[in-house]
Length: 70
Image (cartoon, rainbow, N blue to C red; front, side, top):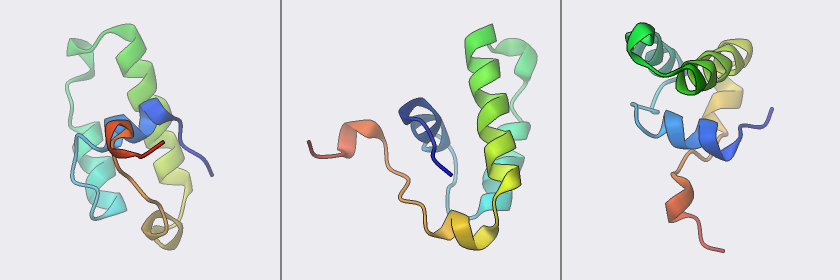
């Protein structure tokens, strides 16, 4: 399963040490305060996280795009 740069950057705004904690923090956001594009990004990212296992999540390398060397 692959995450887009935008999804990865969004996840970096939260605690990524645990998949379930990350999902809980993302779901706790007041979605009515987000613009449509951000709400859709959040929704799709959470759906991907929910469909993967903790083991698969632990294999991810989650860092902001700005920290990746070209």
